[in-house]
Each structure stands twice: as C-alpha cells, then as structure tokens.
Image 1 (tube, one colour):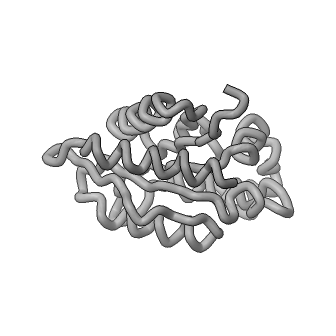
Image 2 (cartoon, helix red, strand yellow):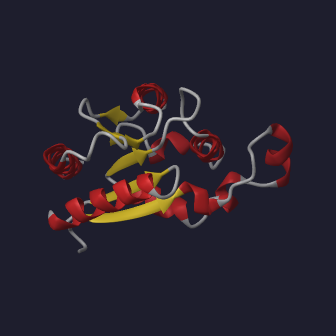
Length: 173
C-alpha cells in the first residue's frame, strides 16, 4: 500500500459517528486508499487554555498523530451536533493542533476535506460550523457532505461518491 492515498478520518464522538467513520474506511479501502480512523475522544486531550498550554505542549500531546496528519493527502471530519455547533472535543483538538508547531497549517492547508455527521439534532448546524472552521484554517472542504440521523439512513451512493472524490483529489497532491 505504499503508493495508495493516505486519508485520515477523524471522529468527534463514538457509537453512530464512529460507525459512519468505519463505513468511510471500508469505502476508501475498497478503492485501495489507506484509511486511518482517529477517534478524538480516545485522545483524551486536556481542555485547551493558556494555563494548560503552559503545562503541556501540543507537539507532545499529539506526537503519535502529527506524522500521520502530515503525510495524509485528504481528511474526513465526522461529528455530531452539540447545541447547534461542533462538540467540544472537535474544537479542543483543533486548538491543540494549532499549538503543535509554528507551521501547523502545513498539516492541513490546501488539503481536501469531507464532512459528515450522524446527529440527533438534525445535523445542518454542525456541518455548517465544520465547513466554516475547516475552510478558515485553509482546508478545501468538498461541496458534498453526509448528513444522517435516526430517520435518515446513510446514502451509500453519496458515501461512495465522496470517497472517490477524495481518492482522486488526493492523487493530484
């Protein structure tokens, strides 16, 4: 798999969003991409603040993930909607990532990203929040997105289409 595209899937919650991450992983691997899931909950990052930054260093907290992130050619961010926005673990991860090095934008800048959610609260707001935040930090967020909830099953055609787009865009990098 050395020539395969490296794509990281970030899940900002467990259960249904992690299941959605696994669906993406299988779809990407079916296209000979190398897909890695990083469950942000499992990282157990301390809550970012200027005080905690004086106690911890982002590059140390994310030492296992930074090499994977820097080598990835594309990303998928999956999160549920929390109070009309992203879950705290998502924002906290981006805060620590932005403090991980002087040139932290090089990890993400200009790289394609897809966004998805399984959310009990509708999901539109979290997708908008992720799109805005990821574009602000320099990512190229795909126009197509995945929104699922208990009354809306995963559209396998959309999943495949997004996976194919990430693999093809990633091959241009």
